Length: 182
Image 1: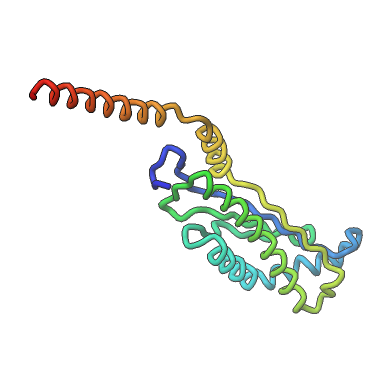
Image 2 (image 1 turned 45 degrees about the vertical axis):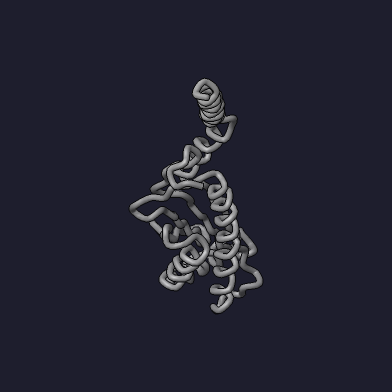
């Protein structure tokens, strides 16, 4: 696929938001959820570093963690993933691969958070880790643009028709000229 193909679109800015909710198995136990939140604050640098590394390994150098925040109410970890400053060009096949890759990344991050919390004094077996991702505004717009462009392309068919018909006319002209020259 050509870099500037009609079925490509420029993507820049926030492409996905991930939300990871780490809570105790019992949502009624506020003191335990406060401990989970406190532990998440203590592990903040390690979590961020691990997540940044996974984003790099899964999505590539074009993407980075643009924001990372831990909020109370158990531990709500909010992560924004954005393209680097230059943006990327994305065709439909790459869009589909990107969506699948973010799904994989979300699963990997959830497993990593479970593993990191499993190394703490908190009982990891009773922890509930949920990961959810939602596409960012630039990916939503890219998906809509690619869906709109994914249909029947009349311009390419017209170009092919013109090339073939002109080639046939040129062939007929050359045949007539050669016939009259003899």
